[in-house]
Image (cartoon, rainbow, N blue to C red; front, side, top):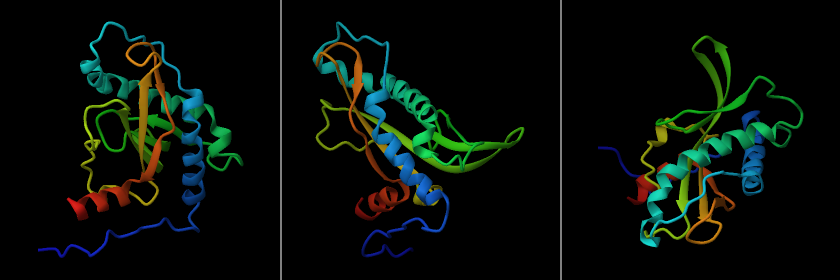
Length: 182
């Protein structure tokens, strides 16, 4: 039986690896998401108690918008054109939701980092959100991120979805912390 460490292990990325400054610039780009997010979805006629159910549908919209935004603001995360063949791609129903990758062969990719995206309705019923984050720490690299994007509707109970500044964490550190405490 494996012994549980007294504290979660802090695995900070190697500062000499080129993915480390890239990850920091991607984090900066993600903080700009509220200024770029747009959705033509207009929500009306839903009871306030049922609004939380929109999280699943809007989660997909948020994932698509994050990918589009990151690819559109490339000059923020790749200002010196060091990653010219890489682009952000969404992959549905698998960890992580978004990959920064370049294609090597027909079905082979080189992945620089991943982003696990979670959306969270700011007026959600749950007092402490779990985000259904069940990934094992071994599946995460030091550069993978867990990004929680809070959202709300423009007219509180109706309107178009708007996003707020996301929460950003190391995906591996969060998984280890979760395993340690739960």
